[in-house]
Amino acid sequence: MQPNIHPGYGPVVYQDRSTGEAFLTRSTATSRETIEWPDGQTYPLVRVDITADSHPFWTGATRVLDAAGQVEKFNRRYGRRGGR
Image: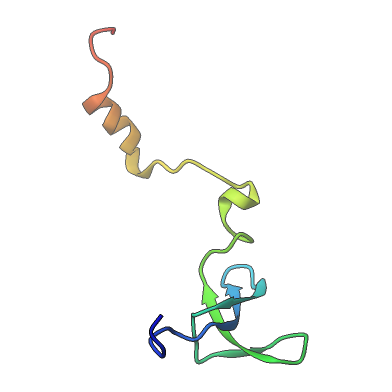
């Protein structure tokens, strides 16, 4: 491995924007925002839109979205024809 070409790898706090839940992990991500963690240390804070705390698959709130009848449009265009 060549020296000085890899980004720094250290502790980072990721926070879910919708739920506010946060978790501490290690990453190469950086941020200008910081947060004081319960251990008394200050870590970079990376805000993300979706984590396992808010993702529909993990929360059990999955739903099927049909934007403007796209499923029906697909079935009309490519669906079975002639009683196959």
